[in-house]
Image (tube, rainbow, N blue to C red; front, side, top):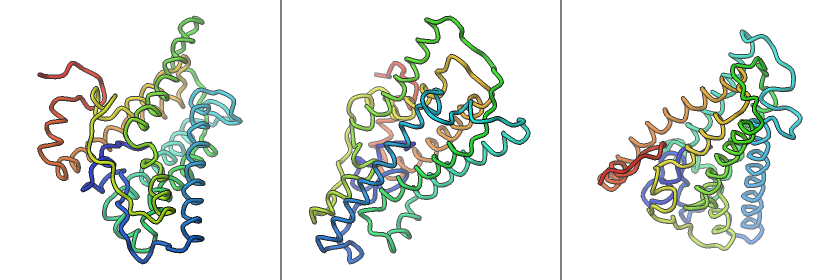
Length: 275
């Protein structure tokens, strides 16, 4: 769950969730076999992400997965709440620490920069996989829409949220976001070049359309259980805390360029822009 793609678009920004520019350093494999292994690693990381996000849709929607947010055996809230909160906290900590510039500078002393992003994707997928596996269901209903048309509309809205996530990632740098562009550049023995700052598509409406999509997907449900409510509330809190830190970093890196973008484009909720 990346908090923004914007950092992927600026050649001088390596903070937050964006990739590190791959320098030509000795830690990068130069042989054909080594470069092939880098590409294979990137493809496996992308496959891990793809399987994880598909399972996440089923997990949140209670569709076609062996264990979802409301199934798989529940327990009393006094036990379920701290376990579930800890699982989400683990993901948040992994996501935050591995995305910090200081960690990236340290990590790429040992890890080839071309696979730094793919390693991040692997770690995030593993944390989510652990969450899906160990989540404690709290199936007591908080509210429920029983009319068939209402249920259909909310399920459609949830799918629209996930569609926004995918669409927003492709509008700027999907392959960068999940590490494939970095590993492909290494495979071809070329220097990785950032895409450059640009504002296109949904990024003209909100600064963080991925987060808008996730929020829609997590809150649009015809049956809100205690467990689903806990999940949505904690993830929402993490999103907004993460965005606050991220935007401070972006202003520090991009200066007035980002301030102007921030003044004219809302953060998450689409609103009328100021002239």
